[in-house]
Every structure is written in C-alpha cells, then in structure tokens.
Image 1 (cartoon, rainbow, N blue to C red):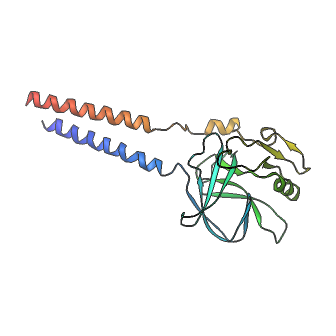
Image 2 (cartoon, rainbow, N blue to C red; image 1 turned 45 degrees about the horizontal axis):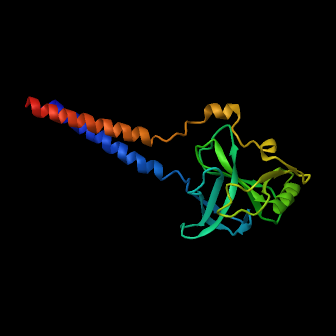
Image 3 (cartoon, rainbow, N blue to C red; image 1 turned 180 degrees about the vertical axis):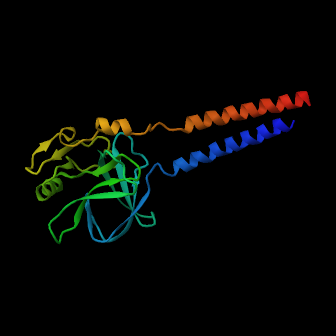
Length: 219
C-alpha cells in the first residue's frame, strides 16, 4: 500500500507540473517586450517620441508577420505594422533593435526587432513612398507595401523590395526571408508541446486510477 501511495503522489506531481507548463508557455507566444528609446525613432507611418513602448506579435498573425506597438503599460495601441521575417545565424541573448542609419539630426528608422534566443526577427515593412526615400538615404534595400494595409488585408497586401536605385524587385529575391541552411539546421522545432503535455497528463491519470483500483483489490 505504501508503494501505491508513493506512486500516486509522484503521478499527481507530474500531472500538476504539466498543467502549469501550459500557461507558462502561453505567456510568451506574443513576445511581449518592453523597449525604451532615448531619441525619436521612425516606424512605418509614425515617429515614436523618446520613451518606453511594448512590442507584441499580433494575436491573429498567421500567414503574415504582424507586430503591434503599444504604450508602456500596454493599455493603448499605437499602431499595427506589417513585417517580414529576418534570420540571423546566432540568436541574441537579449532584445535587439536594428535601425536604418539616417542623416545627422533626423530620427533613426527602425529596421528589425529580434526577440531573445530566437534565430529570426521581424523586419518592418514601410509604405512604398517612404521605402523609396529610406533606401536612397541609407543605401539599403527596404521592404515596402504596394498599398496601405488594413486589419482585413494584412494577409494579402503585395510586397516588394526597394533598392537604393529606386528599383522594385521581388522581396524573396532581394531579402533573405527564409532561413539559410546553416540557420535551418540550428532552428529548434516549433511544434507545440501542448498535445504531448496533455497526453502525458491523461496517461498519468489513467495509470493512477488503475493503481488505485489495484490497491483496493489487494488490500
């Protein structure tokens, strides 16, 4: 009987631990990150004043990479912006914000946001007219929206890449939007572990019930 009780206790702990792991993972899916800027920063369609903001992956982001920018305490949505994926060989251990360098005296333009520990980040897509100007000023290729997106059209807005010579080329041709072979080999499996946790929990509960019935039978 003592053995059965010990096993039941251990199984109960495992089930509870599995149930606690699910909300812990759910809290991180949107990559909620507090960022503080000491100077004005340009983002697609806006200039952010110096201060703190929260960057989050859009809760409905599916086919497209969409990011929301909120005020510091997360109570006011400032803007929703379209992004493309940007990959790096080594993940950073902390939040990384990359910028397009601008002429002295003008706000830097936000290029990409990388979440700690991830090989991929979110490169911001600018309105085409602004992308042409940025590409010329910074001598960099800038992803651009061909039309202004809305909540209903984020998944379908055609994108292009604008070169410093103001030429429009396909995004996939000019920007590495998929991981290189080296990065792909290092990327962790992204499938959710929630089904496995649920299965383990059910198996543990079933085993616990079976042990309890056996204990009653032989007591």
